[in-house]
Image (tube, rainbow, N blue to C red; front, side, top):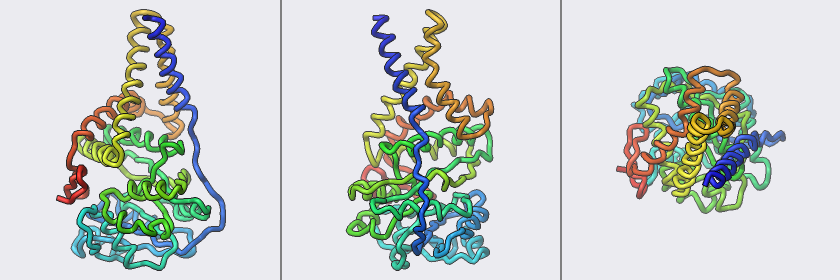
Length: 354
């Protein structure tokens, strides 16, 4: 039995070592593709650092683009900042029964501004560089490109739980770096208008914009490009309650898109915890050589430090806790029938707005 146990630990350990070392894949394309582009910025309420975020989005080193914000009402609190910055603003009025407020806003913009070759989704909570738009759009110059996307760095501007979110976000970066697990992230995503040919009605009937666009691209056998150098910053002030509300919602949307995510996630994190606890307890009470099975955890922490270019006790503690937090997110999200998103409640089981 001991031999079988050790063999299992070796196989699990080698699998995680392979995962932690087989990364850093991104698609930083260089070309002269500069199509006429519409940047769509759905706004609802005042995000943390909203004015700074919007300024960064409208000040791009790009020759031919137009930025438009979309609000539910002219009375939205974000409008005072939008007007101050003199950004075009339209009211969301697209008619859809099952879509989310964000998808309604995007479909409103696409319908009102039909003469653009490329459309870009920019969430109002992202802070970007002046090269962001150029870098994000370049991959779409490749014939088989479906989506060009990136993933944010969640910059902690609060207490411990904002640092947990910082580390939580690294799993998204890891998924982006592998083509097999890559997905469109709706906070910063570009696509050609032609992507929605014969799929516009489908897109406009969804709760999650990025999930729908990812499915469309895959259905058309088009590639998803991850542009690391277009990475935005999301200033994150979350406390305990805000973090778990956000993390559970993100996980629930992923599971709603594909139930496989729940099963794969449980298998992955249970295997991780099995290896972690085996290394600790067998290393202490049986043989110190078992502590070598902590190598995958050490590699994970080193990868985190590489991404951060720094290290702190809070980050290390968050990294150790992360498999347990992810597992809790998976179980809680799998039981959720409704999510609250920007003040609205959605039924994610049948995708109807409540």
